[in-house]
Image (cartoon, rainbow, N blue to C red):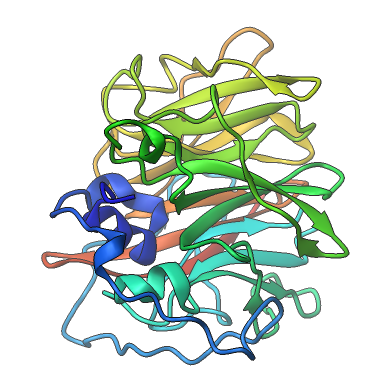
Length: 348
């Protein structure tokens, strides 16, 4: 995997939600860095360790979340779970009782920490009826015995028996090319056995390609996989594509086209379990990355409506779409310096 991009790894650590804003820098060879082994006491179910980063109080984000759509209430920063380090790539269980998210113990972490340390996916159970109260998070181990991985953006099948996620791994399609190409996101799948991820496998082509393929969401019935990609055929930057499953086979992804996709960046599609026709997604078509929604009428997607703006991403509604969790990325003139989980509740 000697074509892996340093900027993309930093992005994987800071915020999988706004990768298009942080691309660049030089290449990294995994063969040239030391990859420490986690302590024997850290594994699936281990409590999240302490943050190793303090936010500089002089750094003030350009913008705070602002709800624009009239049927959603004021945004609320989650009073639990958030730390000085980035919480990102969120997924909420359909019942709203379990929140999965990406976390790293430090900002600007060493690459060994990104690929082999305690960086990765964590899960927290909701406490009581307050949508902002969650118990202490624990590690959700998707890496297992891989030689190095940076994982995020989970999607569960309706029965909860499989989890799809995107990852930076040596088995990414682009790294298998001769010569290898930069391919820092592919989509993977693993069975869930007694609540624990089982053997992981690359979903493979045609869903994955030598280009960026990730930031995805399953349709509520699990028959379609909506993904973010910059593969040939994109209108510009990243677009949202959809692949349909027949039996055990995924079809060639189809670009959703206008009005969903534009010459800007679109991605991170997500649906509420009880509303298969409304898709929430992220775009920077109007400036800073914002959350939009579009409705499918059986034939076409509607003109997207702006829901939340202010350097936000990862729209994640609960099953009945009464609560929408999302991520706010802290961005100033120096770049991104954190990410926190927020939510808003329906008012109608």
